[in-house]
Amino acid sequence: MSPRPFAAIFGALALIACGAPDSDLTATESADDPATGSLSREVIEAAAWKPAPEVSAEPSATDKADALLVRTQVLLERARFSPGAIDGLEGSNMRQALKAFEAAQGMTPDGVLDDETFRRLVQTGPGAIMTDYRITAADLAGPYLGVVPVDMKTQGEQPAMSFGNIVEALAERFHVTEGLLRAMNPGAEFNRVGQTLSVPAVDRRPLSGSVDHIVIDKEEGSLRAFDANGTLLAYFPATIGSGDNPTPSGTVKVNGVARSPEYVFDPEALSFGEVEHRVVVKPGPNNPVGVVWIDLNRPSYGIHGTPDPDKVGKTASHGCVRLTNWDAWRLADAVKPGVEVRFV
Image (cartoon, rainbow, N blue to C red; front, side, top):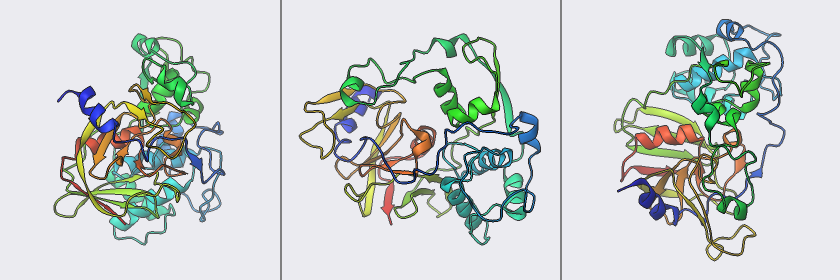
């Protein structure tokens, strides 16, 4: 079945609970503040854990990206414990990814970066942390929206929900926030073909096996994928439904996967939004459900991507399970119809 009809089938089901504007739950954490300090490739590659006072023993939120935390987040993703969007900040997503990694390693899962945790991360994901990327003519060509519309009516008028600009596109390609991408490349001309950028050497390998079942922790805000032997294949931070639009309980199953889905806003079926007529939003990374929809056999619920990767795990959704576009795509590659999804 071709992607667009497949997407349309699931898209019509996706709307009662998903895709509306986020409600912020952790406004104190910002992943897009400009990073400060040295974030050169050499400094990030050489970053290593040190005892206090260089690295606090207690987790704390900060708006200053840190080279050690950038390296740690790249290593976490490489080990299949996603921190969400790589931002170099000591936020909740990184702490929970650290806890999950420590638990899988048989360590005390406290979510605090220390010498032993860092050592095991380095062993798990050897190789360069950073790499170079040269901007191409295709990168500049887009197409780009310029200003990404936020209201549903205007979104429905777009030929595609593309990236707003090249910085957003490159940030998503390398799994970082736009603020961190700029901070790692001060003075870079993003509108020049041939401009060399310093970016994370993100791991694009598929999961190491097929997913047999998924466990979604509604309290933690996380998704874990397991194979048939119960081996953990991946951990992802997730945006879970709010109290007004709760995520399902119990066990459901995957119906199938739709790539590049359309999003259909039907006011007769929804409890949110101010648009009074039906709106169809075309596919694209800024589509309300991102670039992939994993349909569940509970009407209008699914696991999907997002146009706002920096908000994953930090806001409430309208019932569905929201991952970064790249995490959702990787998970979709490893699931088939019939996979169990358990909400706990």
